[in-house]
Image 1 (cartoon, rainbow, N blue to C red):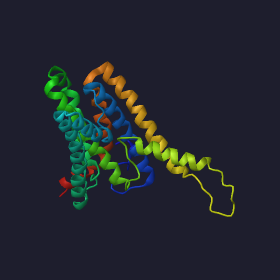
Image 2: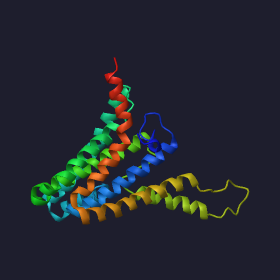
Image 3: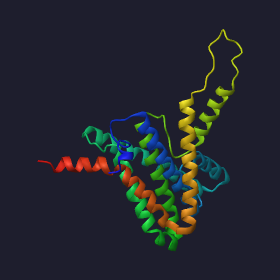
Length: 246
């Protein structure tokens, strides 16, 4: 397997591995989110807008739209819950690929999404709502993986928190410590570096995802599935080899 990504999805973690995996997953999330918007006209990686849509549609009397938005939130939650179940099951059973299981599921679903894109385009009235729920599920699945791996230090499917933290650290960096008799205010440069990279990778993924979907259609999700497959291949192969061993 590719030596450069060894350890990115292993159970034994290091901060650098968390950062590198976070950047890769932020890229995938940005691409899936932007491509998904072009496919179904809705962003699916963050739930702030979805929850607001529930409230707005209820006030406007659009109960059906409110229920659809609520279903998106439920799908995201179920994705996160699925990650928790798979990861904890894997850890309980001592798997090398405990953290890989939800990412492998995400890769498989993205692959199906890309391959059957023609059917989705042919029957939008049925498949568009299903696509929204699928993408919300995938984003919940993925965000929970890196959240659990990094102990909530890194998140990859939305940038609101990242941009907020970037602003906080920039404010600390700009603060002038006039009173030398009191503890100084200093920016956490490591945190600023990590969050800036994550936001940048999400943006880069969004550009690639939008361009890919514009020119290639649904098949543009296949490379995203392959990225995830490469990330999880080694630990899962180790588990399979250990299972076959006498």
